Image (cartoon, rainbow, N blue to C red; front, side, top):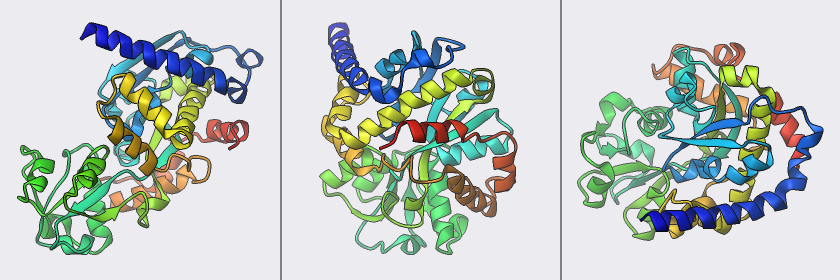
Length: 332
């Protein structure tokens, strides 16, 4: 096993070195920029494919001058607030929940649109058709349950009264495959697996169906103190992550191979299909502030948070100036 993992690291490192070299002109000349305040950067390691742009950045980060790069397990928003990691890609709703509680991180950019797909069996017609049905999600308190609640409320359902939620102790995807529940909201690589195996049918796809497809699903945030004290390091790390995001959009087969060779995910086919399905090319186009307003209003109406969009945006919880600079530097 050690030999296999070492070989994977070598293959991934070699491939990334070529990517970093090819991207250096677009990355700019670090020597002409202010010196890094630190050469250490801590990022999360997650098994969620759609946010893996942050995990294929090692050589790009090295090209930016980082010499001590750490990948911490999991990837929960509270880790970012504590300073266990410096930057993180996560669901917009998870960040908003944390900011409503007063957690100390700063939203910096949107990364990609969509990724969640709602599947149902033949007797489920649309989100409104979930009334009285049993639904499942990959986990409670991690984002999918909140999203399905908001989606149900958007079409006039009362999620607490109209939906029957599968037992959190059970694996909802398996229950759906076995026909024991009516619908399942999955995120990559689950939708890719269910489609490949022709299980159920797509009821709603947040990558293409409005209004959810018009807003970021996942965003990039930084620990507030790290962003405040290390603006140069923040911008350079963002640049590496956004360049990796561009790679997912422009060369999905190459990015998928990096993910598999790096040991981040086992299936190349599902990784490749995920990178093809998820719109990674919208970070320049969509306004992240619109996403904050969209989710905050709905989360407030549904009782998840007390904050208004104005409060979330105004209280040092967002900083878009790095993003605007990088948009100019990294023109498509």
